[in-house]
Length: 435
Ligand SMILES: C[S@@+](CC[C@H](N)C(=O)[O-])C[C@H]1O[C@@H](n2cnc3c(N)ncnc32)[C@H](O)[C@@H]1O
Image (cartoon, rainbow, N blue to C red; front, side, top):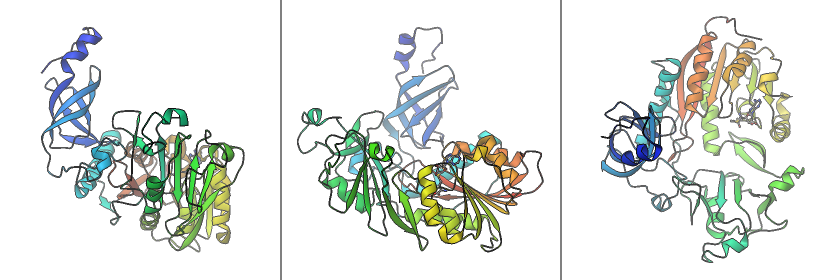
């Protein structure tokens, strides 16, 4: 195997190692397979599974690390399969773990979490479990798609059957792979993907209520007002531009026996059955929870999913998105929740018995952890969608006086590397960290 000296010219250093054979040892965050060259250099490979022996095309290279893509599988890992979706087989990059059987996908997700905890915070031995099984297909009720070709004119150069079809980015590319159907889209969305053509727009976000059958399509500002793209009458069409100018558009969804108003710009979990599984995992994490007497602080509270799901009657919700706040005021009216329009970082903490924190991908980080700590809560549920941020945040929380009792993986996104977790934390000592 070719060793690459940093003193060689870029051309010379890249050419000889464009392809190499590699044994994949384990999986890391982002769903990448990790192997070592003979030189000891780490190579991270898209599309590779632990146990595979693969031919890798190197796409990025530095002295300490390289990245690449699988060009051929020379020996398959146990649990490798042909992608069941014909769109993935044809190059769609929307689901990046379809080449692993579903049982293996779960094991890999647990390995990624274990690896992130150990590597980032030195946390070992935290029990990891799975929170029930969710259907692995037809699940997504919110889906953002691209449309190839920004204008009707350029789209005219493609076949008429293909014009305006939505799609996802091709694997290893920024181009759109047009699809005729999506295996993970809820049928209420897949029907629109199959039937409608979005000529003249570059992006479409579908949002549906699986239990209310309400549907919305949010298109980008290029779309002409009144354009319906062949969408059925029941679908509410709204442009990003109209939303920016203050137009209101929402659907309703039912989760855990409650009705939620969800506006076009508000965050909501990508599937209602997954939202229910998350509520149950959060309830286990903060048990024993007395809905009538425990003071709950719901940080990054969104439209009120966890406050409503826990039926918390003494609650404070902290959220910074105007759209989510407006929905939360409607959704939590009967619970009398105090709704605080603030970023968590600048919020003046109030005392709590229980905190549920569900930050965006970036996680809590120091300021978010300080907010949790400053509530004085004994029981904390941390909902996390990024294993690296999870590893860092749990390390910060442990340093701040908490113990991690366990982590539940809620497999919200089968067929993809995305991982959602609920961590159970208990305060074991009062910490100097606070505000
Ligand atoms: C992952 S979502 C969770 C929402 C809600 N818990 C749910 O499950 O539906 C994160 C939420 O945090 C909000 N957010 C992101 N950064 C924030 C910050 N620094 N302060 C307050 N809210 C924030 C977002 O607007 C979003 O609603």
